[in-house]
Image (cartoon, rainbow, N blue to C red; front, side):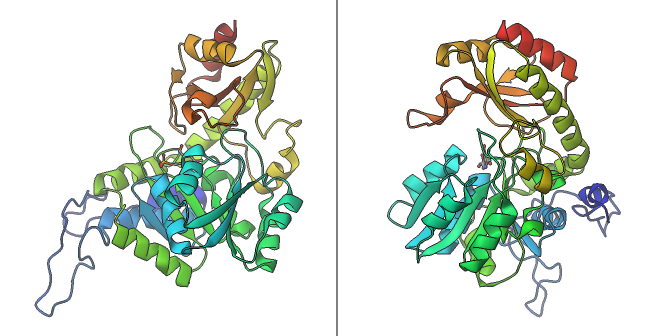
Length: 371
Ligand SMILES: Cc1ncc(COP(=O)(O)O)c(C=O)c1O
């Protein structure tokens, strides 16, 4: 089946009792046991599994070409499950431009438990040099947040395999519609389903997908069920509902973002645009080889510093000034101020999540905000 068909059907189960064409939300926390002690419905207790979560996990596994998927209550909880499953004294190679929430998790929550090296993952030699005897995982984020750096997934997974290291890819920015990391050699994929999967900025969630059902994946499942950072049935329902339109929304996001990137590149108040679809982006050729389109996220440097950049974010009328991404509405933010005082993100950087409004309105809005 093709991806649009999977997105619509793989997360739905027609209700056997009522014939409801759309799977109902099963709110029950517990499920009736049979006289023989078994569970005739296949479910025991909702932390362990739930019909709506099962449907969400099924559709994500199919979209990513995975053997299995596990849903969590946030993207950060999904990331944490991998780091917890690694066990103490593991070394992780992570991107120097990593989503700051997960970077802070590794530094603060896993302090003294996991050793981390933050490396420029667009430089394969730098990765090679960072490998240690206890390196268990390379965590890739491509395109990265917020600099839209591109990492070569085939080259990284080849190096990792030769050194018996797992590779996990945060695929939030691309979604499986534009990039399928497992096909390129990765072992695990992670999503903040808060973003494009949900698609409407009204649900927080995360999902992991795995190429194999091996001992490591069983540990991840154990963390999911026993630590219990699971999404509610309603959150699963909303995410499955969002995924049905994911392929079409992604095309709209990428189309609009390409036009906005070209506009920004030609604007006299813009110093630089970071969008992998632009020919002058250093990762453009690699992005072209591993992505089918370049996504809806971009960032740019405003001429000047933090004051000039904040002025742009404060002056928009169609964009909403807010963090997050992947919703139908366009968002804009001065990234350094959300990342906090430790940030390495340039002070004049603006990140935008290009939504599905008409691109002419978005360009006009940015044009008036840039002055
Ligand atoms: C690339 C990326 N990964 C992970 C996350 C974390 O996801 P969540 O906010 O759902 O915990 C985010 C959130 O912004 C993100 O942008």
